[in-house]
Structures are given as structure tokens and as C-alpha cells.
Length: 264
Length: 340
Image (cartoon, rainbow over all chains, first blue to last red; front, top):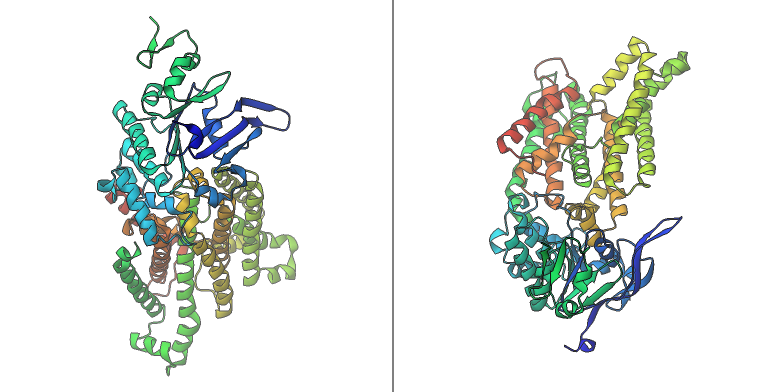
């Protein structure tokens, strides 16, 4: 793949993330230079507390960067009007939906909010987009079920469908595989891979499923104590980046299988 | 999606009209139904009947509709904003603020003494005091809450202000005469029947403002069903929507408390009863449904409070709880689920 010819959706330039109070700055990570291409599935991995969530929160404009800039479709994220930003970037968060009494269709339809009028009426065009999101995620049978009737895996699919209905170039998911069993973890990530290919959207997710991510992602962003690296998974394995991911006393990365093994 | 609910809406509207006529037909003076219909169209021969219907029963029925629908809607707004099925229109301390204002006027009048006191305790001073009290408490809650990001914190701040005002009221009660206490307690019973057409007009104008704001918040309320962070990611201006919802609630619940006293239970229960019939979370459907349902329940409660064929009028506040609470318990036990 020749990367220069591909359309860049999101780019960070010398980004430093962290928390600033009046007295001092707490730097979580610095010198972050990543570029997310159109139609790619990108996995963000790193140990607990390394700053994955801070990075996602900064990219999604929930918190401000300490320095550097984030460009979404060549425009600074902070320069977007909230509604315009919502048309470019959709989120799937870890928090549960507030009202479980929503039906699957109603919940997915809420993804159209940035496009609807003052009272939120759905146009025929909106319905078409919603139906497409439902069929892409194979949710046809659950369409009229209530959210409290769904399993965790089904609910996660519904949340992904809602992000699809928002019709954005970029979808960001914060740990979409937590609380799921092994099958559904693979299922959700496989679904994301399919969606990135079929809809040509850029999908960025953070996860602890490193072995699954290595098999499915086009690009991976690895956060370690010293640096933030982004590259294709096979290159990262050759470079030995995954070895730097965790302290070495308990587990070690096995290059041949592409997974972590417990030290004996 | 609204078309699914055409029948329930038509039935509710029919019920509302029926309850309205039943409500104005009942009272301590029995007037033949035929004469009541006649009096609504034109004048009837019996002047006292005409007077009773025009100046007593009609304003009371309209008040019941405004109170029931207004409290129901503000309850719905609060339950969605705080994502809490136990929230009602008074969680922000509105009723306790009103109580404080009224307590200061009625119980505190002893401190001013003599002729001045009897001047103070007119009906308008109670209305003004209740409005001022709820407005001031609300202002305090909003000022504090503009500094916190978390919506749950506003809920707790509202409750705390409620406790503070309740404490002040008990201190005032301690130093008051039995007569003043009785007057204060009577205000607390709530009353729909004391409004003249002029007062009703002022009530109606403020009520309409609140309703307009609540209609303007429909989209924001639906977005909030996903939770605040999702709502933000969908481009919702959280602070602005929150403010509009809170202002709408305070206009509705504040005027209702000022004119009719602190009416218990309706604001909490009506949204739940409505959700049992209209199985949706979409506020575009829920808002008009709660409006109709609240008006109907309030008319029914008022009819019961009249104790048909007797001279007694029971405190409306007791009736709303006595009639409504078992209904909610029954609904929840039957459905086994607090859907929200």
C-alpha cells in the first residue's frame, strides 16, 4: 500500500496529552504523530493507565490537548461546531445507555439527531440510513425489541449501528469488547473490520484484545511508557514493539503466534 | 411513529372531555345535567346556578387541567434530565421554596404585628410569596449548579436546599400561634377552587411559557435518553438544554404551587402511568400523552375531593396521593418492571 495516495481522515501533529491545572501540567504522553486513513480499522492498545482513554478523550474534543493539534478532515477538531463535529465523528462509549426502555430502532434512530429538525422528525432519507445501519449489523430480527431485553453482545451491536446511522467518516469505540465472551469479542471486532471495508469508514477502537487486534487491524497504535507507535501489525511484531507493552516479569510476547504467553 | 398511537390519543381526548363534564356536573349544589350543558352555551334562568358554574366550577375545572398537565410534564422532564424514575417536579426544591415563602408570610406575620399582619395575609400575598420563594430557591440551586458539571449533583443540591428551607419552616412554626399554623397547614392541603378568571389568566400565560419551552426541549430530551456523554457526542449543547429544561419545570411547577399549593404525587406518578400505556421513550409521543393523562387524573381527583352529593370538600393533596399511589403500585406489581 502506498500511504501517501490514501485520504487521511484524522491526523495528530506533535500532540501532547495530559491534564492541566493552574499549578502544573501532568503529561500523559507526548510526541504523538498518527494518521488515520480512510477505510482502515485501527486498534489502539496499551497497558492499563497508560493513557488510552486520555488520548481518545483528546481526539474526540472532550478534553483539550496540552500542545500540538488534531486535524479531522484537515480542520482542527476544536474549530468544529458541535453539530458539525457530530456529522464527522461518532462514538461508542463504555457507559451504558441511560434509558433501557428505548427500542432498538429508536436507539439507532437517535444517531440521526445531528441531521434532523428541531423536534427530531425522521425524513425518508434518515429512515434509509437507519435501515442500512440495521442490515449492516444484522439486527433486522431485533429491530422492535427493547434494550432491556438484549444481551451485552447484542447491545454492543446496536450501539455500533447507532454510530453507523450517524453517518460519519470516523467512528471511535472505547473498549467495545469489554464484558463480552471470547466468541463475541471476535465477532464484534470482525464486524468492525467488515464495516471498515464495506462502508469505507475509518474505525478506531481501543482494546485489550491484542492478539485479536493483530489479526484483524490494518494499523495498530501501541502506547508504551516511552512512545506512541503506529504501524501495520506485522511491522510492529518485527520491530518488537509489543515486547515493550508490559513489564516483563509475568508475560512475554511470542513473535511466532502473535500472542502473549505466561512465563513459566 | 406517532401514528401507532392514534387510538390511545383519541381515547384519552374523549376521556378528558368526559371527565371535564363530569367534573363540572358535580358539586355541593346539585344542578341537572341538562342545565349545565345549557349554561355552557348560553344563559339559564336560574341565576345562582349560572353563577356557580361560571365563576366557580369552570375555573376550577380549568385549574385542574393546568395543574395536572403542568405537573405531569415537569415530572417527565425531571425524570429524563436526572435519569431517575423517582424524580418529580419538586426535586429542585421548588415546593420547599414556595413553602418557605408562604411560611414567612403566614407564620412570620406575627413579627410584623397588628393591622399590618392582616393586610399581609391576603390571597395575593400568599401567591406572591410562594412564587418569590420558589424563584429564590431555584435561583440559588441554579447558581450553585452552574459550577458543577454533574447533573446528579444538581439533584442533591436541590434536595439540600429543600432540607434547609424545611428547617427554617419548622423554626418559624415553633414560634407561631395555633391559628397561624392552621392557616399554613391549610395552604399545604392544596386547593384548585380559589382562582378567579383574572388569576387564571395570569396562571395560564406563565403555564404556556413553560409548555412552549418543554416542547422546544423534545429533541434534547430524546438525546438525553442515551446519557449525557452520548448526547454531547451527538452535538447537543448540554448546558443550554439543561437550563431550558430546568426553567420550563420551574415555570410550570412554580406557578402551580403558587396558585394551587404544593400538590403531591401527580408529577411523579403521571409519567409512569403514561409509560405503561404508551410503551415508548420518545418525548414527541410522551409529552402530549402526559399532558392528557395528567389533566384527566387531576379532574378525577378533584371530582372525588368534592365528595359528590355532600357539602364537604376534602383536601386535594390527600386525594391525589390516596387515589394515585395504589394505582402506581398496582401497575408496577402487575407489569413487574419499572420501565424508564
